[in-house]
Image (cartoon, rainbow, N blue to C red; front, side, top):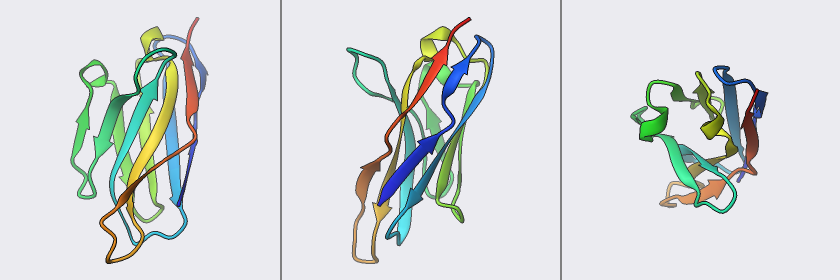
Length: 120
């Protein structure tokens, strides 16, 4: 199973970006999908998560600005980010809990990270 994240870049404060993460490989079902972010010398933090049924949750600082969604037919999770602020600058990682067969309970897989820089 591989996760390929894309969509990061440099954006001015107040701008927007849309991150995408495609899951590929041997997949029976994808349970939760998540976006994390990390800045140097700090722990990776959970930004947003979406269940297989579509339930979402967000860290407090991004509520109302970020939206997580998924396309199950494409095995893809998105993170739409609006109203970006300098403190959103980080490497963003996608994560998915993937079942590779009916008998598999699911394992966590990670993408390679995509850098988001918010600066004027």
